Structures are given as C-alpha cells and as structure tokens.
Length: 46
View (cartoon, rainbow, N blue to C red):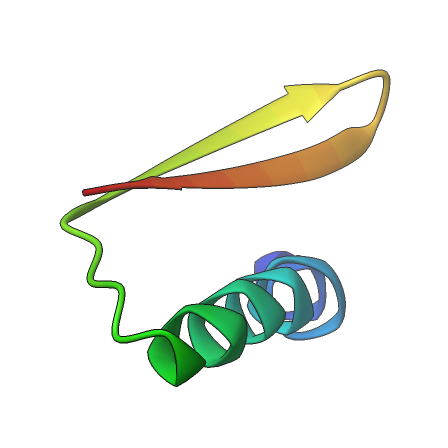
C-alpha cells in the first residue's frame, strides 16, 4: 500500500517539480508533504 502511494502519487509530483526546477538551476533542501482531503501535496523549499 505504501509503495503504491509513493509510486503512483508522490513520486510523479516530486519528479515534475524537480525537473522543472533543474531547468532554471533551482536547488531545494527541504520537502514538505501534506495530505488534505485524501490528496497528497508536495512543497519544496530552498
């Protein structure tokens, strides 16, 4: 179950954010994951 959540929900979100950031040379040091109304949200911070 945890594997499915990571593989199908969190990793695609994280990958898109990191790939977009890498195009503009942004770097992140922290990741904050929340779950609101059954949906996961990722926020990166420098």
